[in-house]
Structure formats: structure tokens, C-alpha cells
Amino acid sequence: MAVKAWKASEVAQRVVNKNDLFILDVRNEDAYKDWKIEADSFQYLNIPYFELLDGVEEIMKEIPQNKEVLVVCAKEGSSQMVAEMLSDEGMDAAYLEGGMKAWSEHLEPVKVGDLPNGELYQFVRLGKGCLSYMAVSGNEAAVIDAVRMTDTFLQFAEEKGVEIKHVFDTHLHADHISGGREIAEKTGAVYWLPPKDAEEVVFEYAALEDKQQVKIGETSIDINALYSPGHTIGSTSFVIDNRYLLSGDILFIDSIGRPDLAGKADDWVGDLRETLYSRYKELSQELIVLPAHFMIMEEVNEDGSVQEKLGTLFEKNHGLNIDDEEKFRSLVTENLPPQPNSHQEIRQTNMGRITPELEKKREMEIGPNRCAVKA
Image (tube, rainbow, N blue to C red; front, side, top):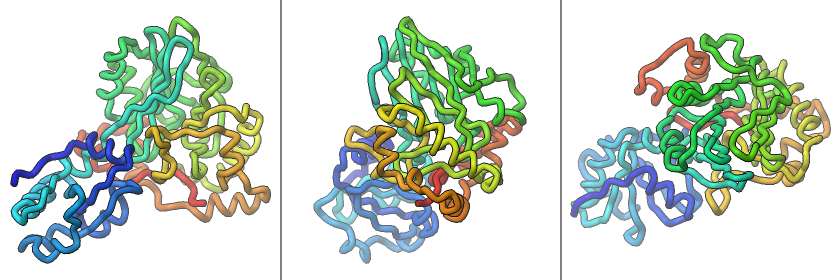
């Protein structure tokens, strides 16, 4: 029986639709524990590939006969061989084309709402937890927090018949490589960065200041910059059309941003509290929060989007409900997960100070995002 190769997009649809799937992950145990394809509806078995070199007979009883089976490895080769072994045993098995590297790079576009003469889209990077955005109005578009898979945004804009005029990063990212500058170079768009995060960059950019307005399209969309430090010293949020709050890595659906990725947790924790408990508190509680990351699949809605009202987050997000300032400081400085893989190299790349080859970039980003404080 021939084995099938599944694309990352096919797996993504099963994640969003909450379909059943059994995943046999043949990576080493430490890699599997650190990062895997997450879905509430999936079942998992982790058996390192080297334990299956003599065959799969001994694990057949652990694999259900009534579910689709997908074999996963880091790059593809090992999972294809194991899938063929399962096929020889009479099982209908598939493997993930491109392995976990491909899963890390897949973007799933989701419409999150309408704008004046346009729409707002969220690009969900399920394998990494990154969220990017494209605001469309008339025949123009703006991209916010683009990841490095720039062709996805360029092709999407072409399909929509719009021209990308502005590209923004809410802050200098440390967990993934930004595609913002590359998109700007390819389209002639203006590339905006918060100047307090850009003191070490080696390229030209437009300085994004507090309360600055940038308009796109035939019907104007105000992209109001809101200085909101805490995750980084320059972190800037956007209020789009007085309806959507793009919070960057300051506020997530189930958690809040960590202030230590530049090694300054004690210095920036006060800024983080000021942003969350004062600046955000002054905003309309009806704003829809659209963060730059999600941490767990419970944050993904039924329609595949990641969004929630600000007022709801002030009720339910633990990080927004710590009255005692010292308790807040302790939570933020003492509950930090390990820092993202290669975060210093990623920051240097986003500053333009180093230019790694593609395979090196892929290796730098492998693994989960770790931008949040653990509640």
C-alpha cells in the first residue's frame, strides 16, 4: 500500500476543524517534549526512529486501527520510512511532507473582521504560535508583524488585488525572524519600527512614534500607534478603526508578555504593569485584542482565529488581575519559561547585523515560541 505525503496545510485544517488524528512522532524524546503538533483532538505516540530500525511490529498494538495515522519527524526522511513500514503491515499511514520544519513555517490566513471598504486578516502560524496581520482597504494594504515567509503575504496581496503600502513591526522580535523589512524592500512599502527598539539596527526605517496615525486605502483606516513598553522598551500597539487592538507581545489571550528577552526583566516589569494596568485600562473595553502570539491551542477559536474582547481579558486573564504590585513583579520575574531558541541571534538578524542563510534561519526558529509569562 502506497504511503501518502500530507502537506502542513492539510494538518492545519485538521487542527482547526478538530478532526481526529493519530500522530506517531519519531523524533527523539527531548525534541518531542519541547515541541510537537498541538491539537486537542489528536492522539500521540512518541517512539524515536532508531528504536524502529528493526521494524514496527512491536508497536502495532499501540496504534489504533480506526484513525488516520500520520508519522512525523524533523525533516521528512525518517517519517517516510516508518510510514512505509506501517503500510507493509497493512496500515493506511501517511507522513508529514517536510517534517516539523514545514510545520513550523505554515501560515493559515483567517479573516477576523471587516474594515471600511476592506477587511482585516490574521495569519496563524500554528506550528510556532506566531500571529501576523494584513489590513486591507480599497486597493492598499498594511502588514503588521510579518514572519519571514514573505511570499505568503505577497501572494495573498496579489490575490486580493491590493498593493502593500506600509509594513510594521510592533517591536524588535526575539523569538522569530521578521519578514517586515524584506516585504518593504520587495514592494517599496514604508517599513515602520519603534525607534526605542531600533537603536542598534543598521538599516533605514520610519520611526513609529506614540499616537502616530498612518492611513491606507480609499476609505481611511487609522492605524493609531500606542506606545506600550514592557515586553521591550519600544513595544508599540495599534488601534485599527477604533475596533481592533493589535497588542504585539504585551498582552495575549491567556497570559501576558515577558519583559526579559533583552535581559532587563527587573527594569521593564514596571513598564509592563503600567501598560497593562493603566494604558490599556483607559482604552475601550469593546476593542478586539489581536496579539502577536498564542501559547496554547485553547486560545484558538472555533473559526481558527485568535481574538477576544479587551474587557473579557480584564475579567479572565490572570495577568491582568493582580492588585498587589509586588505579587505582579514576582509573577513576571519568577515565572519565566526558558528563553526562545537562538533569541540573541534572532535579535541580531532582525537588527540587520547578521544575515544567516535560509537553513540557518530555519534552525534558529525551530521550537515553540516563549514570549509569555507563565501564570
